Length: 304
Image 1 (cartoon, rainbow, N blue to C red):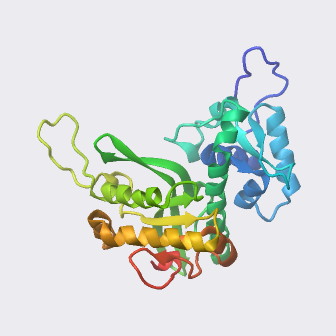
Image 2: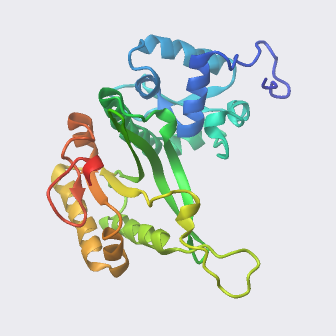
Image 3: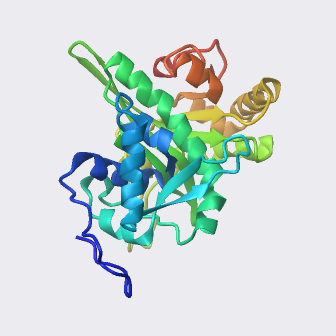
């Protein structure tokens, strides 16, 4: 049960966490940090009505657990994004789906608006995978996409993936577990800076953990084995520019994979690919829309 903020009237109790939809909405906002009503609708219950989610979100807002920020879209002045308040973050911090992951509440509408474009694009990139999983009866839900996951890569530096995806392909009695690091590019950085991300992933692949307290370096194996049985594939999802410019950025990623020795070594062990977000939305991620960075014809991401 959440406590009211000091000085605020406790007009209503905290939401009943046994109530499924409210719990799911709060968990979705805690995990993804921010989403529009339509995105939460598509993520959680696409077969339900959008009005149902509007009612739930407005109720949670009246109770002080969520707030909203308008989107800078003159054509859709009533569109906004929802996020947890500090009070909502306190309420959700012990939920099973968020175990081990600290809450990231926004302290003001201004703070939320600064994160809005990139955060919503990362959520947008998740939705085609969720829809694909439902269509093919694979196992992948809203809690199988974790944004902003940090990993050490040595020398005091960290790689922060835009998202880590867990996905299980099911075919009869056969189950194939897939994992992916996802990088979402809105064409807001230079193509060279985007390609440098590949060097960071190559460093993560080679980075070895060192036991605490040892004076002499003694390797305990790759650090990523602490979290993954197999190094996840790396998927770049591009949007925010004409197709020709996005294709050039994919070519620059391929050039980095071909010419940087660390990245070239990574391509021999780990599938790396790039796709345009609008193609995922139109043709689905399981379509042949992924360009392998090591070269070759476009493939479904599960076939890389």
